[in-house]
Image 1 (cartoon, helix red, strand yellow):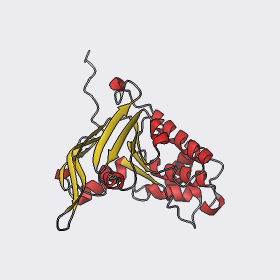
Image 2: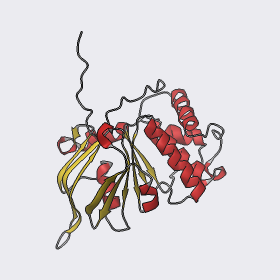
Image 3: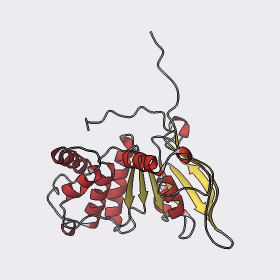
Image 4: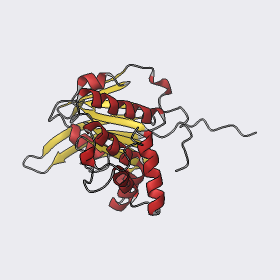
Amino acid sequence: MSTPSTAPQPSALLLRDVVKEYPGTPPLRILHGIDLTVRSGELLAIVGPSGSGKSTLLALLGTLDRPTSGSVTLEGHDLVGLSGRQISALRAHRIGFVFQQFFLLPGLTTVENVATGLLYTGESAGRRRERAVRALQDVGLGHRLGHRPDQLSGGEKQRTAIARAVVGRPGLLLADEPTGALDTASGHGVIDVLRNLNANGTTVLVITHDRELANSFPRRIGIQDGRIAFDERTADPSHAGTRERPTMRPA
């Protein structure tokens, strides 16, 4: 009988000595030698004030930009050696994005908005709709399938945006200030949705300036002046990323 492999899963994200500069005289350095490991299956927050480098870091984490120096690895893929087209394909299939602004198309229903997250999969319109319905049901919006964005509350709009981000079952979800435009109750509902996604195996990373929100997460990373100021955990991290991903419904 063969012995099951005990090799650890690759990290969802691995940054080593990452520097980001923008041209100028002298160059404007935003990030200073960032080292960061995010394990598969983690739920964590990156917290910092405006101007700390959070947005720049998010762009690098999401493969939307490249570092000036250092390395970024996504699920075992070293991005330095990949072409722009290869990075775009990897991003499309492995990363979901949620932003403070919902970016929903006003002329489309919720199910149509969510289905746009599958436009480049090659699936039929019927199959895209079926998957969009499931994603909306998973975030508690199965009763809002035919509603347009102007008929939704702020919390419902954000949950629709989350459904669109995860309809393709990405391994990593990046959420940039996902509760910033919401009232307290709606914000709590959105965070509950993110926690449920994480419980089902998705790696969830939230960028926020809200220390109270960050402190409710198992891991908090503080960024200040382009450097990591702290990296704290409230739970034993020894099992992080090692649990088996739950079986999902057929996509």
